[in-house]
Length: 225
Image (cartoon, rainbow, N blue to C red; front, top):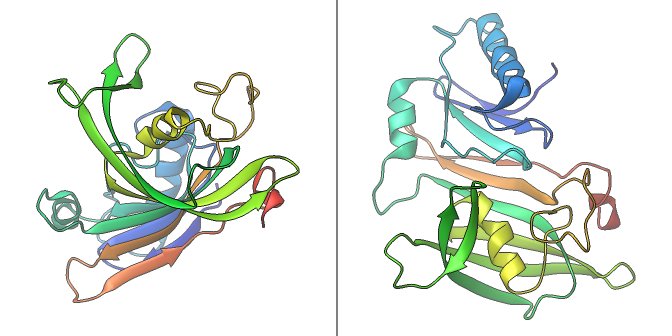
């Protein structure tokens, strides 16, 4: 398996993850990916082949783009420490159906997990089981003929899989999201959500590891790229 390495040193490994490869805890493709990365580390004379994904939801299965791995336990702890400072910041590119209500805005919602089908839905702020999710979006381009909008998204609080729920809630379904846009999207279409820019505060240097990953030259991205 060929893997595009975006950044690597003794502490960090940042790769370009294909959108068809599930997250690290799911499926055989994820196992193949981890095996390929560990083989790469062996060839690069690393001290060991340990790898720790930045987060359990590391770019949920439909999402491609830059994915961060720690190469040792100390770095893994640094990336996931829960304090006021976010050591990993990420911006997404997304394509939605229709025109967004505003060219730039912040969406804040409270979500609840539905265990029966492992999905999320919008609930009230007073729901004791609610998870707060806040995202900032900015419209980059419009394709009026196909009624598609290209956006930049940055999560302030929440997880990547909350994005599709929040966008659907304002009436703008992600291209390819059949969970919320059955009337617009078809099964088999790629989810148009891509991790394109990642900044990682380096655990042993006073600097950032910064990478960008361009969406693939295929539908629906080729409407804009």
